Length: 380
Image 1 (cartoon, rainbow, N blue to C red):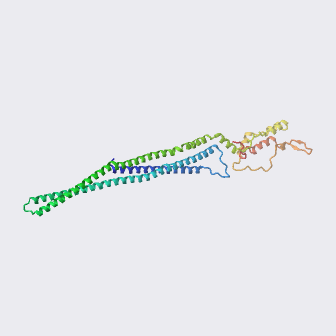
Image 2: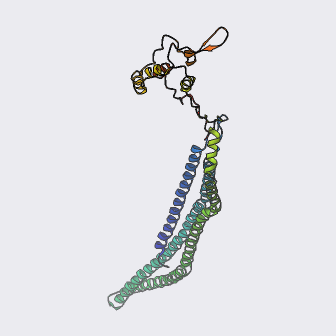
Image 3: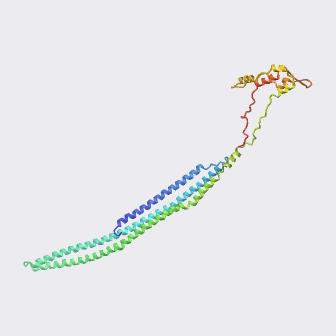
């Protein structure tokens, strides 16, 4: 890793991006929890009974159980809000603060690495300049030496020219020696700084970057755990809410609800009794047993009941009431009895009793009881 500064730069940037990506994931999860809790509360509010002083509270066990379930669901929604709050404070907030600190620390370490690299580059440049200067002075010294040797071997050259070339040679040689020493010093300094850079400064910076990246990984691990702990902390309370729903379901009593319906709608009236049998033939039997009607006349006045009943059926009015007779109907007693001034009764035979009874069958309405006028008397 000593020569991979750029790669480490990219890797640490990726680590911060991944941290922020996870923070964004947690933020969206928090929004989901908040919206879920809000929707649950709205649902509970929608189905909760709007109690009015005029309205009685439902007493059915199924209704009471449903209201208890709504209360438990409202508590469950509150726990979802607790989860969102815990995630926001313990996970998302911590991630955002750590991401800011991580960016600052990374920037500082990278700046230190760049400064160290810039200083090493400066040392190399100084060493290279001294090297080039030393090389140039050496070439100038070689030229001065060649010029001196040529003049020294030339018989036509004057002594002044030879002396001047010799002084120039000594000057160039002296300057070459000075540049040589400068180059040696710069080279030694560069080698020392280069060794320090690659064996002390850069490894230390890389170690700091490594520790920073490891702390980032540890922080992610802690946030993963905190993310799960936020959910796990509310599990006991959520379990109690679910147990409350189960208890509410078990509290439903169908027999009690049925009894409530019976108590609510019973009228208190006794059921109607049996209709008595009305014997219209007792007067006939009574007259016959008294012997007041002669047998021939009675036989002559006998009427076919089938024919009479058939005729009576043919005279029914379907769409209106039958018109009332002009004369008031006579009772069977008035047909064969009459009162004397002294209060005694005697039979009257002007109208035959059998004929009257059969006429009553023709004209009389059937006495069928009507249930429309009966109120409900049977309690549920």
